[in-house]
Length: 494
Image (tube, rainbow, N blue to C red; front, side, top):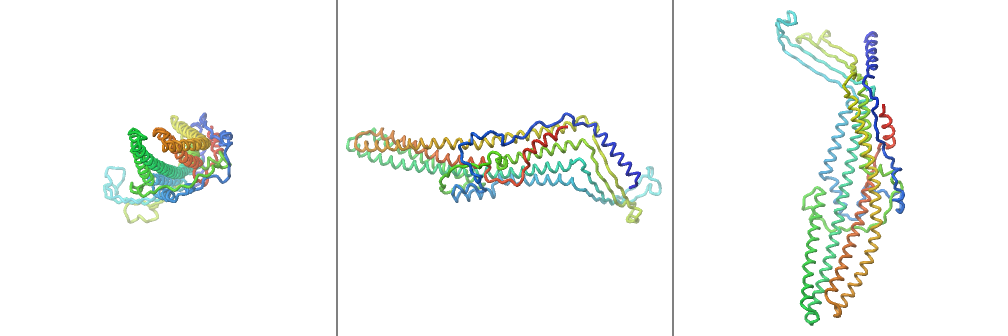
């Protein structure tokens, strides 16, 4: 390229830069600011909880429940559940899109080969002897195009897609957490159904004993047929309760199989849970600051904020000239005789510049859309952070008051069992009627059912607390929320 031609191209570039000011970003800026987790007031709500630096859930947190069958169920589900495969496919899709966008950072080369047999018009623009003859036109070319990313548009587009890819990867971890939580919760309900059935069977035995005692009392003319009929009527109701619980156990087995992504027969193979006792509750000492890096949903939203901020950078770069370098080398000839001769060669090189001048507000509108999308992503992130802290506190509040409920239920159960024992003794000695025994038994049964439900709820609240803390998720790297909020918000103003 001659010096004169180079100066001409540079002059054109400078003129383009000057004209680029016609499309203005003036008055357009973002409005949202990411919340600082340390400023989410939760100190008083967490004041009555024991803290431990090692209290974050580990990766296979469900093993703390101490049930090998549950471990196998969750392992099977995490390896092949259709919902997880969908999330995995979305990750691969996002990675492929990022690869497509990333190609813009590199030179693009294209080769073409054409050979056309053509008759030229006798009355056309081509002079004799070509006019009126058949000729073969051969064209072999190699083109090179490279966009000079002066304003960082292509790099920002790649970073935006990488952010969305990271969000999809974290969404996969969130799906794994939700699946493991759903399986564990259903498993806890299965354990509760078995415990309730045990209670119903014990109740049936007691009522059978009461029925036999009532028959003897009727034979001794101590009781009437009314008491006998009442004692007999209690048995079908208890058997009905057992049948209802058997149905619940079978349905819960089906639910576990469905969550695993297996057929109903897999549910029939699930045996009674063997869960370990519930331990004491403690929280990580770094709450709520580190919660934003431990919960997959929060981390995914942070990546979406980062992607949205990069979209703004892309939209801004579109206000400036687009500069690319084009080159062409090849061979062209009529016929094959001289196709490979040096005289058939074609060479070309030079920059290409395009810039917006008057676009009817399209660029401003596009930037406004991206900034509004960023604001929405930030506010969604803020809502997720606040909801995450509330989620943890809600589980702690419920656990705290559940302990109080269990203490009161334990006292009520002891008193009702004592009253039931006295009623049975009086009934055997002929000092009480069957209705008194039935009333006392009903109170004992109700308190035992409440105790079983409370024990199951205690385990479920612990499970919910693990989920609220993000399970065993460990992020590799995430953009700092302060940088996202301050740099992107202030940097988006023009």
